[in-house]
Length: 583
Image (tube, rainbow, N blue to C red; front, top):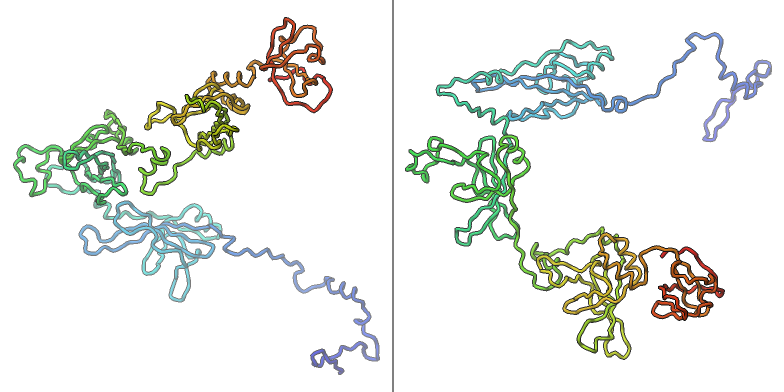
């Protein structure tokens, strides 16, 4: 046998290429394609089944059984020691089995006022089945069986429809469902207890079960003005319907300087009327029992809007919460609820420093915060300013030639005044008034009334901190804005602006002509005011009129008519621009 050496030095046997008698082997004569065809060719005669089932894709359990839970119902018996009323207690439970990881958890439905720690008894985990380390599987569960977990025997009685369908689809026959036995202690409580006195018609147990955690809350004012340094303090009166007790709590405000005692009067039943025979009884020494009280306070004694006297103190009930109102409307419909205004904090008078809003913040908190602004109004009216031309109405002759620009900012309703500098006047121009809100004359500090765009008519007098300004003109944007909100602006203000700016309210067609001889203005002539027999393209040249005070006067007997000026167009020839131009 011959050997070949590999790359790593090991000897490998060499395959023979010829047979006996130096005859070439058949395998050496086959080409690679024929070898591949023989390798995939299926033989006609086989000793096993030729059909192989294709394996399906593997799906893990946490995907196939995700959010699929089996639910069983059962109970367990708990022994009760040292009790003459019961020997054991029946406690129902719910058993959950999670198919994705074969874990289980056991919960006990909570019962109100049971006095037992209920809820989750065993958290979710794989429960041990025996001492060999095996765990419970869903195949081990069935109805009527006992499930022993950590020394407690749980008896399975029922299951839900989904669990029954799953178990039957897996070939498990479920037993007949059972019912949970009745707790003997509950049966014992339903029996009437023997009584040696005349039973009361009032069922205290029913009141406890129906009125537990239901409280009537009244907001009241404690009138303590009779004492030294007395005042009116806000309190809350809480009436507990479960046992007809009353509790009074004082409402404490921060930085009030008082000790934060939460309870003004502890929870107790308040006597409303004492019996006559018990008047000389020393109530200040011993507690008052029901034998000395003829009547206690009830919910109908607390009427909103009335003053009630509790333990010698007067309380004015000015409001109540929503549950209390609904309770009175249902049980006492004849009692009228009349809420009153609660206590208001007295604000000291304005001292003149800063704005009203800034000064008020010093009264609301120890560390004043900036007042809140109307952000929507500021965003909508950002950079929108109404500008007016004003003169100073003064008896001083030196103030006659002074001109001012009054700017009204729509974003915050503030006004600033700027004085136009005039040469050789002896008065330095510039900023006359910072941005501020200007109150109207005659308005009070409690209810201030500030200037608005509706007050700014041409010719109106504006009083600004003992200075009187007369508005003489305004820009075109002022009229455009005020017409957009014409429902909020008086007609007098709009008419004064239109008259000053030379804009008519009626919308008639106009003819616009260029004046080549002046080179700076154009004339708008209405159809009715157009001179008869004039030519459209040469009106200005034919009638040589003079422009003065916005009027065009002709030497003939024609009536003067109103014109408006427009910006000069860069054209040399005179021709018609538009025959229908609406102003």
